[in-house]
Image 1: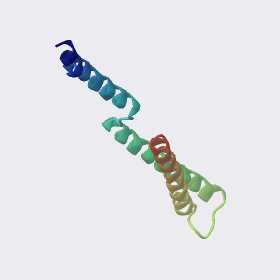
Image 2 (image 1 turned 30 degrees about the vertical axis):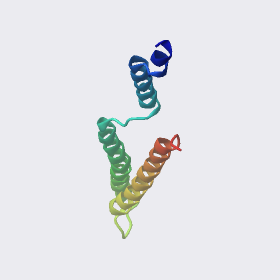
Image 3 (image 1 turned 60 degrees about the vertical axis):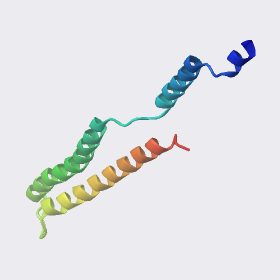
Image 4 (image 1 turned 60 degrees about the horizontal axis):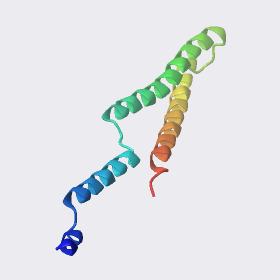
Length: 104
């Protein structure tokens, strides 16, 4: 009778083992917060908006200081927009690389 009791799996021990495995898996897996997406939108927005608006202000100043046949504000708004998109693109690639580097 004693041999039979040892061969049967202990249900409590098995439940504890499964629970420990779930906890270990949950701690090792990175979970992304839904708020992180909103933060990403904000950073991407600011990284595009700041150079664009900065280009506009610099262009208005250059129009007063060094007038040309073309519009400084329009040229620098487009330049700031391109620069902002490049900055945002680099940030997205960095975040994407950081998110997936730990996964097999």
